[in-house]
Image (tube, rainbow, N blue to C red; front, side, top):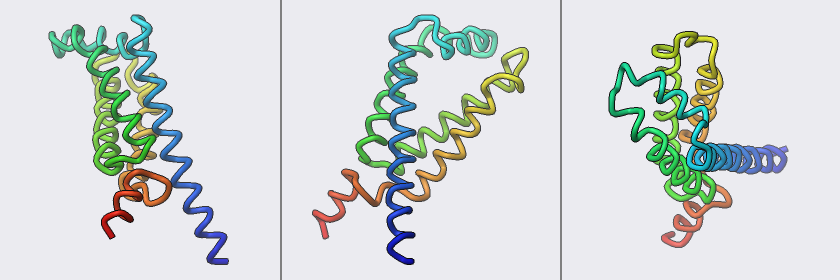
Length: 140
């Protein structure tokens, strides 16, 4: 029975990490490639709160999501990148609930769900099939 649990744990953490990494890559490419992406809409709604936000938000956010996505995908500094990603998703949730006129009925719930999933990666890390694991085994 221990072998089955071990395999499920390995595959579960690996697939969760890959899913989160690909979601961040997809979102980052969408933000940089499509000027009317949902993230730019969020920047438009928050312009009354942060005047500088609309101008820099899409580009820096797209690059940040790409970097975080690659880091989580390959498993390099996974806990750090996942913690930053969790804060980013919490920030998205807060912005959508407080600044978008229909706040609670938007994708805030999706961002909150991603926040919870990202916390799983923060707590579990990338102990299998990652650059973190290779570095750990190399130094051991």
